[in-house]
Length: 103
Image (tube, rainbow, N blue to C red):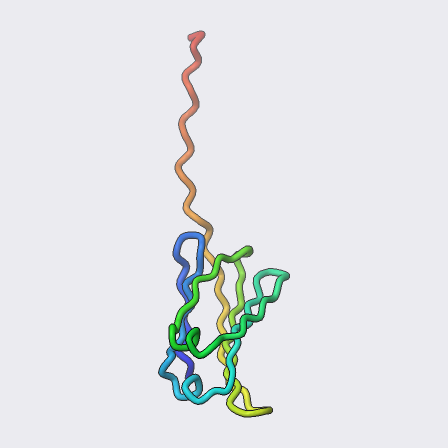
């Protein structure tokens, strides 16, 4: 219902949602809960943030959980979540050993 998606882009995760989703249009408040390894962050989203529909996040671990929560009324919260397991970054190829000058 909220259109969550995430894409690894280099060292960051591009996280997106649908700002036109009815629940986000009608919500009183919204927050993004990010669990990155052993750390949890809660980001309160303003109307401008919701309208932007995206967030770029620099992760600390390869296993990150995102949950977007839209508060429609007290006790009525709609949430959608996803888990991102990141691919290891591409490392440059190893250089061949230097030739032995004594040979």
